[in-house]
Amino acid sequence: MSSTELSHSAEGRSSDGGPIAAEAAATTIVPSSNGADWLSRYSSSLLGVFGAPQRVLVRGAGCLVWDADGKEYLDLLGGIAVNALGHAHPFVTSVISSQLSTLGHVSNFFTSPTQVALAEKLLEIAKAPAGSKVFFANSGTEAVEAAFKLARRNTGAGPDSGEAPRTKIIALEGAFHGRTMGALALTYKEAYRAPFAPLPGGVVHVPFGDIDALLAEIDETTAAVILEPIQGEAGVRPLPAGYLKAAREATSAAGALLILDEVQTGIGRTGKWLASEDAGIVPDAVTLAKGLGGGFPIGALITYGPEVSALLTAGQHGTTFGGNPVATAAALATLHVLENQQVLAHVREVGERLRAGLAGIDGVIEVRGEGLLIGFDLDADVAPAVVAAALDAGFIINSPGPHTIRLAPPLILTEAQADSFLAALPALLQTAKDAQ
Ligand SMILES: Cc1ncc(COP(=O)(O)O)c(C=O)c1O
Image (tube, protein in one colour):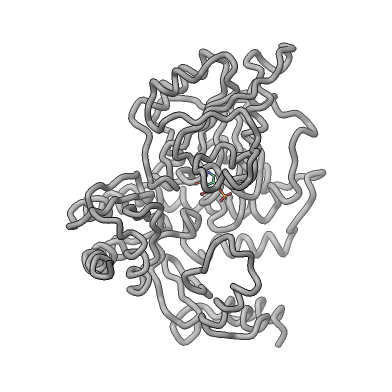
């Protein structure tokens, strides 16, 4: 049987109870091997930018994944806040498959119903005013690139004012906005930036959470301020209460755009559609990606209101794959399930339970975040060792810093799954400390 026939017809369960189609198709296309073999072949064939992978994953179902040696893991990272509905969600996969077998790709000389419907849906959940628009990309960094270009068209006085576009963009220390050159210029970490200098100019970083420092930097030359409502890569650091509002007032007064990067925090991750939605502000632009496609690559830039939406005109930006029928269908399916199965309320409840449980564990000194974007600090610099111990014990977690652990599980994580991690954590911390 060919791999094509298999992928269309294979049904049933593998020996450990999971669906066999993906496993069967994969092992038909590529010879089967164990984890160690794949890792050695990885190091001979893939560029080393990610370092050595921790495991070789072959299959997932819900919040569980399995590696090439058959070991099961509870995925508390969700592909870094991506797998909103877990792995192999039946509705999302069936919508993707049905769209792909109907119309998989068209160029942006054309549109498709799923593209238009998704744009409308995003404008609705973002509560964007009339005249707001959407640009689709394929990733977070591309959504940020589009926002960067939007900012570079801002004159502060409207597109027809005849004034020169401004070039200064203010970002925060600790910010992560992506790895392409424009997004990298907004990203703070020196180790990511330095090898690629010179980056696009005009970007100023101000201390995180210090509203006075931000206000002192905003002036009539500022094109935009870009903020993550919660800094994800920096260890799940929420902006202080009132910060977004103060930033909105100051940017409006100066004619600067307020861009919110909700690539990690958006699409239900915090138990709200957008982490910024309770801040009482209307931003000028929001970037989305990660959870939006439920695991399928897609990014989006929302531009708020007609004036901001007029800043980028025909021919000033583009993409081959952005907004393709399959990615937009995947996102529509994801949003449909999140909405119709009340997943956001569930995220708030399970997130609260996890945070309360974590706060009671010896060795955990601070718990941060909202919904199912959670960071917690340990009383020792053992976070990487905790990640390794967790992996051995069947839990996937992440350490964005030496004493910080991040959890960003599928939004469908059950209470029992959350409790199983809480029950295991004290021993994982002990193992990590013993290994020091
Ligand atoms: C806030 C934020 N912006 C942008 C990005 C870049 O997204 P991507 O990795 O999809 O390019 C990330 C990724 O972690 C992110 O957390």
